[in-house]
Amino acid sequence: MKRTLVIVMTSALLLGGCQSTALLYVHDTSVGINVAAGTEGTAKVSFGYDRETLAIVPKNKAGSEAMSLAGTSCVYSSPWGSRIQFTHIVATGAAAKETAAQFAKTEADIAEFAGLAQKGGVTCD
Amino acid sequence: MIQELSIFRLSIALLCTGFVAGCAINDRGLVRVDRYENSFGHYVRTRVWGIDVVTVRSDEGVVVGYSDRAYFFPKSIAGGEVQRNPSMAEVLREPMPRVGGGKCDLNELGTPMVIRTVDVGVAIRLGAARVGMTLGMNANTRVRLHRDGTVILAVQFDSEDSEATRFLFREQEE
Image (cartoon, each protein chain N blue to C red):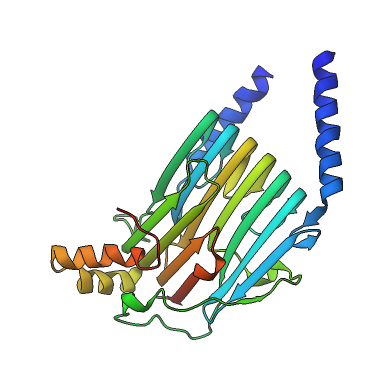
């Protein structure tokens, strides 16, 4: 049993070390025993209650900088994850640059963009 | 010996629960399926009590117990261009009406861009992007966009209010 667990954990760490080529947003809640591995996200073994929220923004094709991204998210989750409400608005590439040009002139513009995710009924105060 | 018997009995009990409640492969079998669609994509939600064998791309696995899954598939619009200078305030106004609950092959819709899952019981995940298992409960939300290209994605989801669902997706290769 111990050997199996070590193999699972090692595999999880190896897989988790791979670099993502996609923009990724993950919200995960677990209760009980949870073993997670994969090429995207974090590798972990958890017992009991565990919650994580993460985003991965990969480098661009040239590999020098992170990809262009403009996004706002609003997430509500009940403590046990049984009910969830979320709104994500994401623009990448040229659309991200144009969105940034449109909304990033003043702090009020940025606040307006961030507030877009709350227009659908979800409130994130 | 006692431990082996307990595990054996637990396995039999779980299997019986699955067969009594129903067995589903994707959305086929005894399972509740709700399908929604608008001009930008499809939203499919499946809820299964029993055994759920999931073969949807990037969400492959098996759940014994309760499985609640929501998938958002973007429509590929040939020659579609991302709207320049988009009015971001408009992006969440496109409604997504229910189009039925019939059977469909989810893999024909492509790879889901947004996945929301709730697994209760024993869940084994075998997808390329997500491998692992859960004994208990796991709720996972995942949004995945390819690194290249120009994309605008807006999605709104409420697990208890399907009418509040919104989805917008526009893409242009650079």
